[in-house]
Amino acid sequence: MDHLPNIYFFNPTCEYAVANGTASWQPNRILQKMESDLAMLPLYFADSQDLILVERLPSKKFVEQFDKMGYTLPQFVLKKEILNTVTVPKTTFNKLLPWGWSPAAHKTLARLKSGCSEEFLTSPVAHWKPEHRNLYSKGFALTILKELLCTAPSGIFITEDLLPEICTTKEQFERLILRWEKLMVKAPWSSSGRGLQPITKTPVHEKVWEKLMGIVNDQGFAIVEPLLEKAADLAFQFELQKGKISYLGISNFTADQKGRYQGNFLNGLPDCFSEETKSIINKVPEIILPPLIKILENSQLAQLYEGNFGVDTLIFRDEKKQLKINPCLEINVRQNMGLLSLQLEKFIYPGKKGVFRTYYQPGIPFYSFQKEMAKKHPLQIASGKIESGFFPLIDIAADTQFGAYILI
Image (cartoon, rainbow, N blue to C red; front, side):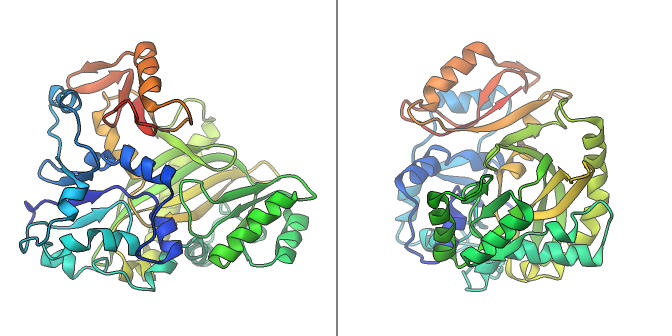
């Protein structure tokens, strides 16, 4: 079965689709543009026989760049062509691998299912079930966090008085403002730092109240955390198959002041981290992984899901300036940028450090940004690996607004 192609499909808005719950949900125009501009990103997960669904086929120049590095690209297929195929012969494909599952993703890929392997058709992700929805919620991650603190307590973990809380009323928000002063409010179903609202000033502005109550009205509740003094963001990457979890590695990412994802460090920790932070990061896997994997294998996730997922972890300083860890801040039940950054490390010359970043600046297309960066940071390739410079991860056309790149 191994030589049958998998089909990859980039839909990073899957959490919003899950929150909405209807199969006909569509992202707004700007998010649709993001999905189409970045549609080829799954190529870094895929084997040469696999298929990537795209809106536009890559240029000859893009393909040649990989040939020069000795890397065979997977096959790119126009999404509208393959999805409009009337019948797909049996066992043409192995698995359908969207970035993340949702009722909308199932509807989009429905036509291709009949051609998938038996292994895929009998897996827990072959059909959407109502109970899947809970796995994608930040409320599920909070349940796992509480269980982890109970079963594997550690002096280095977040203390009970700082644990996130679920809020449904204005009074509950007000009580937490009194208790913690500064808050981070999160929509339960959201990703990459969207759906976040920091509260740093009181009295809270009317517009902010509207946003908070909007989250509650849309999604039923909000997750509220104290705004902590962050030292580092990490994510553990896993694969789940037949109820068993394998650990793939740790990714180190950066987010801005508002918690929005900005990129990942490649090939190790950046030099700007203090020795104390680096040493705690190196200790983290042995403290967290064994109990976390055990709890997750006994949770609904192991019964209802198959595929990749990531667990975000926050290292922060408490009021005594001691480093502490929230070992399970969020669970991303999908492929994710941290997992992608682990895949990208194989393109980098050994011993070289770099960053992986996503790009969006309204009014400045990725095309212009790429021209400027290529001048400032010319690409140097040695033995088929990137030694230094700017390397765009997607093919770029004049109207490409969203981008992704490596900078070494």
